Image (cartoon, rainbow, N blue to C red):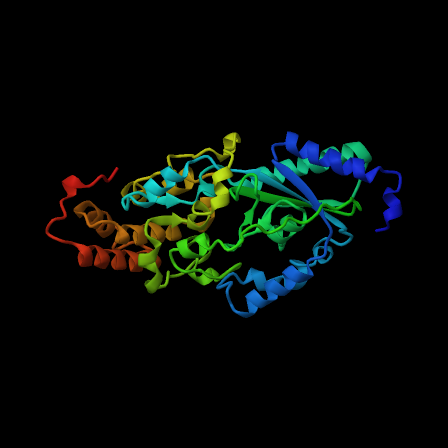
Amino acid sequence: MHNTKYSHIDLPALANDIKSWGVTLGFQQLGITNINLEEAELRLLNWLNKRYHGEMDYMHRHGTKRSRPAELVPGTLRIISARMNYWRDSEEQCDSILSNSHLGYVSRYALGRDYHKLLRKRLQQLGQRIENTIGQFGYRVFTDSAPVLEKALAENAGLGWIGKHSNLIEEQTGSWFFIGEIYTDLPLPVDTPAKNHCGTCQSCITACPTGAIVAPYTVDARLCISYLTIELRGSIPVELRALMGNRIYGCDDCQLVCPWNRFTRTTQEQDFFARNKLDSPALIDLFSWTEQEFLTRTEGSAIRRIGYPCWLRNIAVALGNATPAEVIVTALQSRSNDASELVREHVQWALQQQEKHRTPRDDPANLNLH
């Protein structure tokens, strides 16, 4: 596509308009970058060669489409990157849930409505707004839904820098936000890439429960609790189970300790508010859900995509890690003949853990289970 196609448009003015329209649609910040991802491509290939992606075969499957935007969407010249905050909690609340072994911890991003739908819809509205203003143009919208190097693009667009935990951090607001993109053939002026402000801080590396941040800026997904509870479909490696604590869907530890998250702003986006009391649920309550209850209560949520057996698998591990109690043993035993071999195996492990850590002092009456 030739730039002459848009020679009648005041592109710098349009870029400013796009950013302000984006803010009215609920995004906190937008930036624009070109399609050069050479450095990020080298990092990606190196990461894949080390097998750090585990069973996420799709990371390999798409070849260079992920790091070469014009291969994914021919004609792409620029990427409009946008971020939207989702934080609703306080660190103290998260810490109190993580320290109560009878509650389940769900990664804060997954408590509300599935962000994929919401961001894609808003970005589509932004694309429509541009089209209403300048006429037809080439564009496609993405939110964690295709082979896109989202964080590298956002960093290049000036939305933040990739921290040592591999999440994007913005100095005014921290890292509790979602990102999405519009690939376009509009030759818009580009923004200055963000500068890295991690310095000598190692908080996230130290805090990772399983040691998944194997080097600064490098996460071995095979050790990461988010991967184990969300991406992995089979058995969780036995040696990692006890380290997972009560984290039943994702893990936020590396973000909870990041000093930049002191500046986090809470979202007013209703769709990101917690649903079905999943912000501090009792494990034995969740473990009693039937498959129909699981489907009903996770409707419209990112949690639903892991499926019922993996949900029970994750909760069984957390129950195995919980302070021993008779009610937990009873709950686990109720699923010891579960139809799923995956669930049975993790229940068996959890029962052994409960037995192993039990002492005569364990009195169910003293435990806060709900």
